[in-house]
Image (cartoon, rainbow, N blue to C red):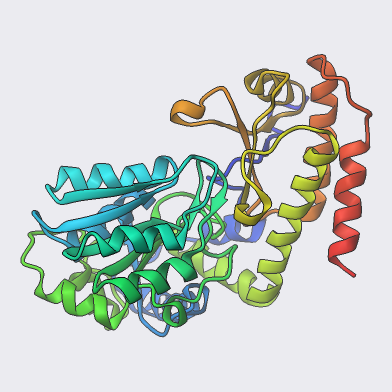
Length: 384
């Protein structure tokens, strides 16, 4: 294998399109000059359809976790009651952030690999009349679950006056999102997943309802203060030094997404999901998540007769294919395949073909080509 030939198929960071790489290699520009103002003016408008909102999408030089923390400290304050829907490691991260800031945390814990149940959420909210915010993870990266965010939002607004705050880090840009229509109050994501960029940018949008709460919140915040970013965005600027090269890359990534069209992007991700799942079903290798809760951007596989880590090691060593492992109590029990952003059905056929060889090499008895054939058939059926 050529040392520099790597196939990155983890749920972030994801591969970068060549044109985006070139855009990030442009000469540096002044971060307070007219060129930067023009750049921000362009990208801020093109971000809105991806979130499904008419509201401004704030741009932070920060990680996805910083976006989660931003949502917490701007929307709630110490002592407030919050309800966190925990379907995996990143729902658990919301819990840790809220604990750190001394919120009174209630949890709706869901078995890892399953999606949240809107009616169960309703029962909990009826018992918690003082909850100020409900936190949820759209795509739970650690389990490959896509939670029913639209239905959860309906329940939150029906049963409470709480804000509904959504972590969309591993699916915004790859999964249909209708922030305004669904009643999502704060939505956050990061640059290194379906947005086809390196890590380093975070994006946050808030509803009018959320902005009223944010404005009235006396909780101290400085770098993460959403008000600062909103006010500077009106001037096509940022309150602090932006990641200039990442913003140049963002402009090109958004141009690629605009050219493909959001409907086609979502269809492509759905196709890759169906192909991947069909392959493992054909190979009789269990999936962690049922079809109804399966994410279009990542698939989690839970083998029952071979070691997940052994397969990951073999395909990495022999083919340069990098897959993700499990997190927390799922470590060593699952492997995860990222199929988001700069990824196509052709890439999925390559991944499945490689993994079939890897399965043979670790002693798993399969018929070579069975998974690839199932993925091919799924692709053709999706295109009918």
